[in-house]
Length: 151
Length: 151
DNA sequence: TCTTGACCTTGCTACGATGGGAAGGTTTAG
DNA sequence: CTAAACCTTCCCATCGTAGCAAGGTCAAGA
Image (cartoon, rainbow over the protein chains, first blue to last red):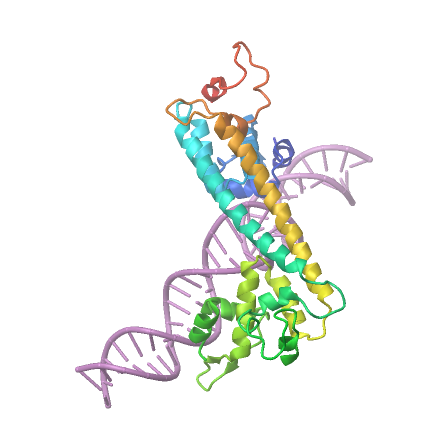
């Protein structure tokens, strides 16, 4: 089985197959006299395993451990579950961070006209809020363009 | 103002200040006879702008456009809002992807004992489900360890 | 004054996972 | 016999961040 066939069979690009072999995630493939790599069903299985795990967001490092556990018929499921749990936790942290970003951005965008006018709370936020809360003379707290014209 | 002082004032590491200057996001800082960089308030402002925008997940490329708009007093807020909107959309896509991962992982983990026993639906999923739905002899559909012992 | 430590400078390296491309060998089909 | 479609290795780029090394500079204390 050529690398191209293995790629098609697993959904992993030939490029990545070589990469995974290079970093030791995948066993070194057999070679023919061509020096072409020769994959068997076992290799394809591992590639599919990797593919699926990547789809679920596991890092290569985590996949390496999971593959090791997979190959160990007697392993305790504890370790697998633990790896999965910390992976879930990491994902949830990142999700929360991004949700925080989205909330902040939506809040800012909700007050931005998005038309020809130059006032924009988004830029005011990015530009630093420290001078906004103390408007020198005007009465409006936000939406002022005094700082923009100052540049 | 030294790079160290500018770093403290903005929260951006000296390393990243040099990087931002190098890629043209930040204007080239003035130099003293030392060849030390010399930052003024305007530089610090830009650094804080960058810092805040990075915190909100904007890419350097987006920040470059936002900074340009910020400096243009008469810009229409439309463009800022549009950049923000597509950034939000990108974040939401990634959030949805990760939420999908979390859901799938939680589902798998919920059925994994996580103890000394080797059965583990997580590994079964990663190992490829195609052979599971057709169990050769047993009556249970999942949790079988026949495939593990086959390796 | 000399030394020491805290700065600053540039330049190179690495990360993680992926893709692109060059330059060259092989196989297969026409 | 030739052209296309493979394969091989090796190098480079991404993106944002951090580390280290080798060297220049400055400030403070003995």
